[in-house]
Length: 379
Image (tube, rainbow, N blue to C red; front, side, top):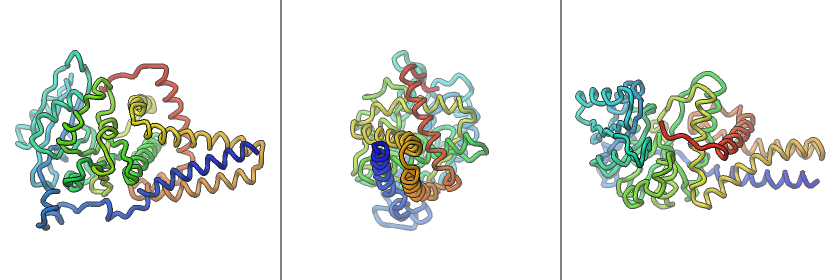
């Protein structure tokens, strides 16, 4: 019976986390969706004018010729009355700089920052971003990656409309394009679960991370927190580690309006995605202790749920075990399914239990691998 009691305790912990996640899943759209530019421009009150303050859109690129050709036009066509596009060439070895310069000749909104390899910060994206931030002339900054396409022409305005005197950091949703195949669904599921967690923690006044594919903050927040200096030597973390350090319950807002999503190109091979996740996961150990504990407990409880379910099903009582499993699955499906619908990932809902098991195993293998090897720099 010990295994059964342990399983019941783990299910209780799991459900506690899903109750936390319900803060996001069942939040009203009106609480998180700002006005689009069409509505905002018509308004004349001071708060709306503040939301339409000038913005610097910052993109750091390294060997991204094809992506820049595709996405620069989408960034330039944003329906914002006053913004600049800062393109950072991070010591590319291809024609990235040439593409940037060609677009700059056509569009005065573009500013180019050329980064040369620095012996102390070789291959460090944070060093490149730091130089780009220094070039920004506006106080409100929006970040994305070279492979990211905005969901609409109102992306820039919708994200930055959340800025106010109090709110200096805005967490957005960086989705992945839908493609055929199991890998694509799994990548999108992992992205969904990550977003569900960081949005929910932010709603619960415990913001801990964001994604650089769709993230905004003020120059004041950046300089008040001394930029990336506390983790400048780490190759990852220009997004999540900065948010973990700078975000507070008072200064953080979330934006989950569909027109404010970005869509990135997912990895096409398991090996490529494996390498990407290995790099991302290395930053988690640098989070604040409370965040490491809560995230670690969630992962551990998920792992124990599957282990104890199998053991209890075989050696204790399959009927009671099945009842606990079904209760937990239903509870999970309601909350994660609701979040998936909100983030336009409803097609993933039928696969939640299967993908969760796969994700637990995948994360464990990455943790083990990272403990044995050193991770490569940003490329």
